[in-house]
Length: 596
Image 1 (cartoon, helix red, strand yellow):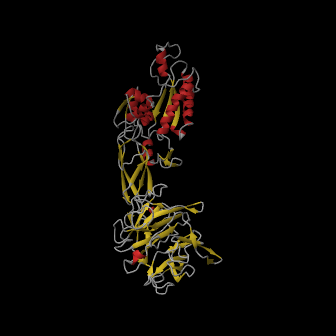
Image 2: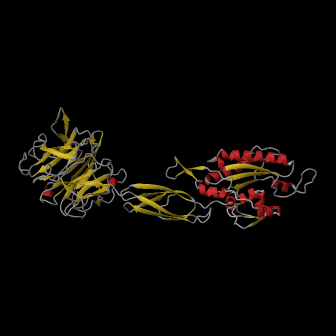
Image 3: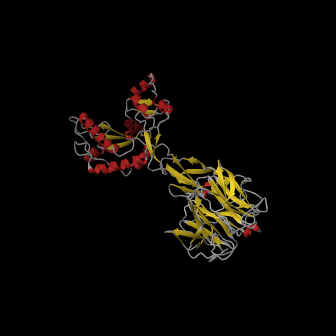
């Protein structure tokens, strides 16, 4: 039971990882060599910040100052990670129990168990020593408000920044043999110890505390939580800034813990150290390399929506690497791993593993290619755009409608639109064509200033060449159209330019990802050059087709779209759609189209 006798040997770690979340596991334990471990008992090691010095405690050494049952501080040099030239520190060793319980960042301040008051157990607590003139000063008592230790078992851990002391002892509100408390340094005064609460402390003993550099993860040994053996090493994380609210403590597992006594866990860089008597009567110091957590690897299985405006898309998230359980957070707030009922768009999902490490991926649920009917659905609330007589300047009421187009195009950054301006038959054809071109250009220019990739909008004037209500009024012809019918001819149309059209622009879209909204990623949406070449390859007009054109019809050939038919036949796409009651620019080979 000698481990219980020396439970007050509490030591700090100086160089640590910022958070325990950096630890994914441990390699097999290594027993440190004879420069540290002997037939005596060695307790936890402390490494200086610069990595050149090691301090440890040795007990049951016949050659010690106070004899076999004495306890002393020892010092070793570190070179290339190896410990050399171990020797006792005479300045700190006397006939009482001596051990170092903290060291400052700069290595010039050391905290010790207070064994320097001249009489055994006169004042149980901490003492402090400073490195001055190439030697350590005599340790002096460190005042901690209302600290009153009654009993032989107690210990301290002083944080690297010298602002926190974790204390193990039987004190006020203790639940067991020894509980853990914290004292905070405020304005160079150490406050009254605060009980860490029942989430940490049990009816057994909680000893050998160590808290990491960021003061959010506490390691300690306990015999009140079950586990591998006599005393196991556990860890818990603080909730916010509270010192009394903690996560449920977790056992470090069988690589670190054994069926016997395990305690004094510390971390230096990527190496963990702790003490155990699993292979001997007395404790020795072991080390293990800290393994990083398995990286989180994520893939997505995406089912596109069935149509442009549908919301029946699905995404399944597959986590192929990492350690669960995993927390899931989507850019829209959902916490489901797999999603249904999605429309097209950009999404991001963040997966967080059990260590608190996160990985975020951005992806796109692509919408099927927009068709004219889809654009028409988006345009349902866009009112006609009007101009003053003979003018092409954008009116204020027209700006409101064009702003709706701007929103549609910014919400759908891959679509391309031709803005077509039409007139009635009043005035000459030449005048109407010139006026409609000016109106189309001014409208398109207004939109271009407010959308990504201005080349996605183009303006085309058609004059009176595509009257919606056919009522000629040129020259001396008296029009039979009413004012309302003339107004129907004075219109603006928004026609979707589909991929494959000669008017389709090779553009680059600036995409903003949900997880990185301040940066853009350039994505070329027209990179399939082979497909583009296929669409734009000239389809020759055969002699038979020329005869068909003369007779007022056209047989669609393989590889042709409505745009290619328009090029080959000389009839505009709008007229082809009107004459043949077409709702799409996609037509099957062999289709017979009327040309007049």
